Image 1 (cartoon, helix red, strand yellow):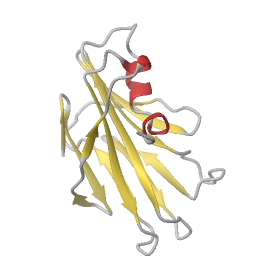
Image 2 (cartoon, one colour):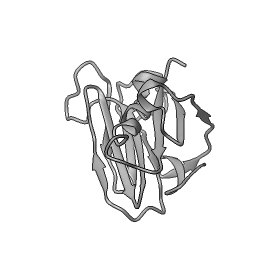
Image 3 (tube, helix red, strand yellow):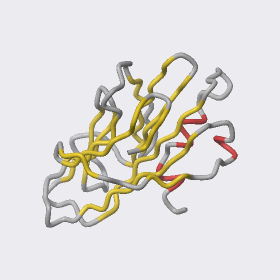
Length: 153
């Protein structure tokens, strides 16, 4: 569990809660004002086929906004002067290009979905929040939660 200002982040695999370690990350040029920046990793084994790996805030009661980019899927939650973003690497389409998994947005987070053809791999979730939120720093959580920018640390 990772405690954030909007609630506890939890990880579920096929609707069963699993433990994880959230790696605290340094702040970078694109997200220097954020208050929290973490990387959550889940090691997927192909012999356990068809998994749904959810990263969410079960207690959240605000609507999320989708903030996707190239090979980035992200959802952001706003409450008062706080913005929290959860990001994953991928493309949430029926036929993702050069990717052997997909995913989906949830009312309280985001999820990966594996296929029978998904190879062993580590799935990454980037979690980032900022307070106070302003028009000038709004984009920083998007950069801070992008696993393609942080997974090589």
